[in-house]
Image 1 (cartoon, rainbow, N blue to C red):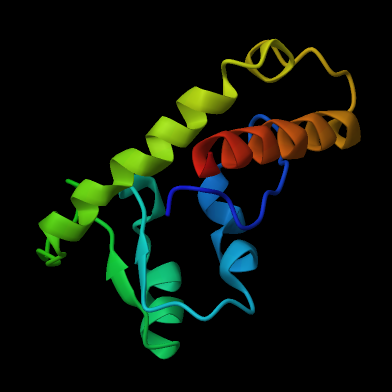
Image 2: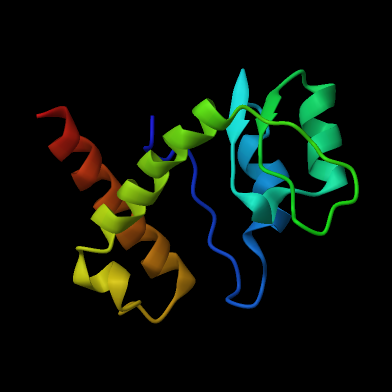
Length: 120
């Protein structure tokens, strides 16, 4: 938990939530932990249709309160820890690579290094 299964590079001005459906496509999930940025009706409907428990806190602008498992949401820190670990690699933290292809390759290499370090 906390290690990436898939990575997609998007344009800097594009919100991550637009790629959420593509990232989970074909995966067998029981629950999905995400931050408030992923709280939209379309994504929640897709998760409900796939019978996936959405552990996503509601946006403060929602009029109806949507419940979520706060204990499960507490595990989201592992994702943040992984992001912090890959930022220790200079080429990732500074976006040294000029092309998206090269950056994604370096991101995959950094993720593999972190994954291997965590196994040891």
